[in-house]
Every structure is written in C-alpha cells, then in structure tokens.
Length: 178
Length: 178
DNA sequence: ACCCCATGTGTACGAGCGTACATAACGGTG
DNA sequence: CACCGTTATGTACGCTCGTACACATGGGGT
Image 1 (tube, rainbow over the protein chains, first blue to last red):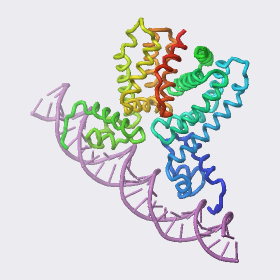
Image 2 (spheres, rainbow over the protein chains, first blue to last red; image 1 turned 60 degrees about the vertical axis):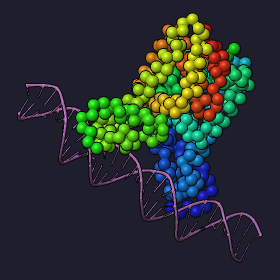
Image 3 (spheres, rainbow over the protein chains, first blue to last red; image 1 turned 120 degrees about the horizontal axis):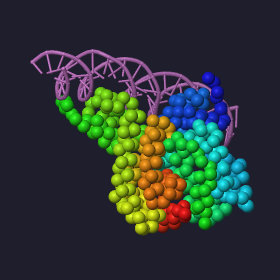
Image 4 (spheres, chains in turn cyan, yellow, blue, red; image 1 turned 90 degrees about the horizontal axis):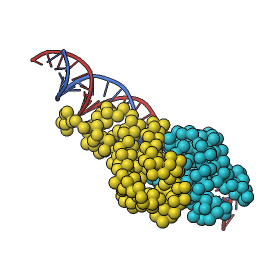
C-alpha cells in the first residue's frame, strides 16, 4: 500500500470506526480493527487517535449529527401546528423501525458515556442541543422531560427486545406536555 | 491454595464479578480478573461459568434484586396514600445520591443488554416486575411510562454528569399520572 | 529552492485474553 | 467401603491487544 498524502485520512478512520462499532460493538473496537476496516496501516490509526477514547469522541459526535438530521428531516420542528407528541412518536417509530444496526450503534456510543468520562461532554452537548430544539415547541422543562421519556421508551424497546408501540408512545408523551 | 470442597464458591465468584464491574466496568471483566478478585484459580471461574455472558446474567440478576430491595425499603409501594410522583422522585434521589459506584454498576449491567442478547430476558424480567409493582399504585400503562421516564431521567444525570433535580423529577413524573 | 515538520509506514515487544485439557480430590450413593 | 460423577486445580497454546519506535516521505512556509 502506497497511499502517501491522503488528505481526509482522518475522516475515513472515523467512518471506519463507526462501521466497526455498528457491526461488532464497542467491545470489538480496537486500533487494529479500525485500521483494517479503513484499509490503512496500524500506525496510521494510532497517529491520528492516540487513544480509543479520542476515536469514540469523534465517532459519537458524528453519530449525533446523523441523528440530528433524522430529526430535522422528519419535519417535527417545522410542523408548528401539528400534534407534537404524535410527531415525536412517529419519528421514534421511523428511527426504531429502520436499520437496527444504526440505532444500536448510536445508542451504544451514547450510553458509553456512563463509564467513559471523555464522552460525557459530547453526550451533554447532544442532550442540551436537542432539548433546545424541542423547547422551541414547548418550554425548557417539558423539552427535557420529553427527551427523558423518549430515551426511556427507546431503552425499554432495545434492552428487552420488545416491540415499539407508537400509540402508547404518543399517549404518554402527550401527558407530559402541559 | 488448597481450598477443596468450597461450597458457595459459585456465589463468591458472582460477588467478585459484581465488584470487578463496579470498579473497572464490564470492559475490565475477564475470567482472570474475577478469579483474582474471588481468590480462586482461573479454572474455577471457567468451570462454573463457561462464558462471560453466563456470569453477567448471574450478576445482573443479583444486582436487580439489590435494587428491588432499595425500592421496597423506601416504602414507596406501601405508601398508598402519599404522592406517588414525590415518592418515586425521592427514591431516585436517594439512589443517585448514594454510592455512585453501585449506581453505575447496576446501570451498566442493565444497559449491556443492548449488545448482549443473553441479558435481554433478564432486563425484560426486571422491567416487567418493576412495572407490575408500580401498576399496583396506578395502571399498567402509567406504570410503564413512569418507569421509562425514571430511566430517562437517570440516564441524563449519569451520562451528562449533571445534577439530579428532585423537584423537576417530581413535577414531570406527576404529569404522566393521569 | 530548500528545509523542516506533520504525516505515513512497518515491525517488534510484553501483557492479557479465552480456551482446552490432564490430573486430583471430594463426597454422596449403592 | 468402593465407586463414580461433580468440583477443583494448574498449565499451556494461540491469539489480539496497546504501545513504542525507527524510518520514509512530501508539501508548505521562508
């Protein structure tokens, strides 16, 4: 392999890391697996990201942007006249109904903040940014509550292997909106 | 070491596993670390628990029982006349205000079900059992919603490193109770 | 045009891992 | 009391890991 002067090498490594986490989970993430997935030598990953935490921070940041697009693309924030609870329940349904790999990937990166303090600022940014967007449709307290409830509902579905019930989600989400 | 015929060897291994996860996280869990913590030879852990998943299942089951006792001991289920939302918010505050190691431990084991299907039945049992207890104070739908919201609130505190606001929790928990 | 430093590459080391397996002791059962 | 299955022990193999380091390279700033 002779790929000298590869500009967005760094970005390709992040993309590879996201694919690795999606396929094998964080437990399967190593400098070597990422290097293989990105088709770069081992030394290249250790050069751009000295520790796996750095790589996870970059990956989580990118995954968050991906979900933010899903949220934006679903028209929930723009639909200022519609039923907010119904809109959120629908977005959740679309997200959970899609590719489970991506869903698990983003949640796993998010939840990893529990044990990796390096990820907490990123998780906090994500929470505040999303709460801010939701607050535009209601008030700050309700926004945070909606976020927490959505997190909890997703968790119950993902952790127990249960089915997502959009009607139930709409019903209980509506309750927290004053 | 000559400790032949050690009855509850198995239980001591589970206890050691819980301590290891509490201190180093699931990432630091291995047959060897558990063996060292339990002061038993390596072969003993692999004999009683052929895979780490088996050990995690046993540990999660035990951790769940621990939290159930916290819930029971707090008098929430018995306090049939008091404010349910306030009671739950108080229990959450006591739990999160206590030893963080234990809190992170139980959540980490719980969240591990995301990537380890073997843990999902245990997580599902826990969810249903707790929902059943809460349902005695309200109705099944509200019980699951309260559980989801409490999960989400705890997550926000643990993942972002924020502070737990009992007043806020009581307020939003009360909203989902019809 | 030149030089320096950020970037890229290959390899090696020591540690920890899951797993397998041969062997030994124990204790309930017949 | 003899037996046999369960439980306990020690060791070895092959693998992957993070890390370190010496060396190559090329392009941007002077």
